[in-house]
Length: 109
Image (cartoon, rainbow, N blue to C red; front, side, top):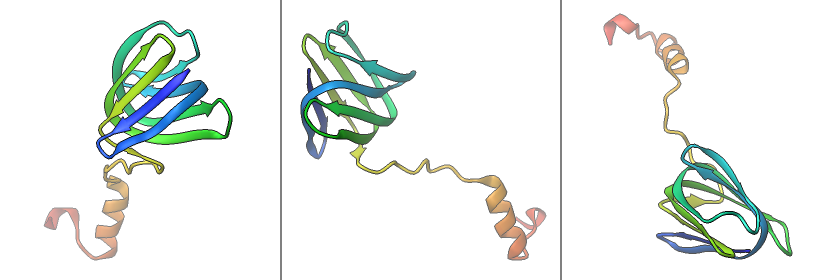
């Protein structure tokens, strides 16, 4: 099946695949040739493309849409990279330890 992965930076992947796994907004979705047509929202996570002739390609996505139609899959994503994105979340326990180590108490903040 044809797979096209496009981000604002341009085409990130275009080629033939035996299968792929993509991060839909509500969980991971596996796609094989002949999959029922559908359109959905992409979540954040890894897309794994089992290339027809070559190694598995892996990308990390954050948001967008996908369309499965006929013999192909198109993914339009807002962010795409070869490395995982940082969550941007703060580890509260780690922050508390740093404050205590520097002599700052929670009450003085």
